Length: 143
Image 1 (cartoon, rainbow, N blue to C red):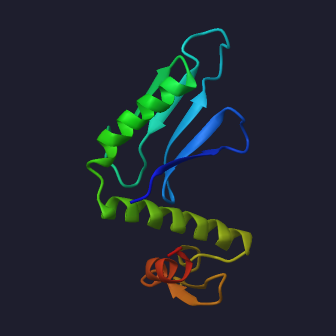
Image 2: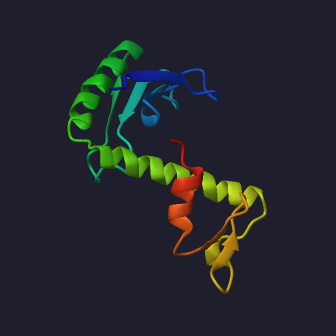
């Protein structure tokens, strides 16, 4: 079973993304806005898709260590009700989004953008509305 890992967010030195294996499950960051206001840290725990409204939680804390401890407590509650299907839903959505941007970057049209509903994937495969999701999962989703 994977462990939680923190990865510094490259665009902010005071922000960490928390991952469970390959799934981004939360964030811990210094609060922005009024620099003298307390508390100074905020956290968010959960991911979507793979959860229902209200299941993701968040909070604030005066220190990074306290925010991390509160995040870990929230993760224990949140992760206790997650299934393999929840993680698969998140991964599939991530793959679909990456594929969409790769199609745009390559100048390709999606099946929804052509009159006959047939298009060519940036990898060269012929796709249509009926085969698009299966193609993305089979050819463009990380194992």
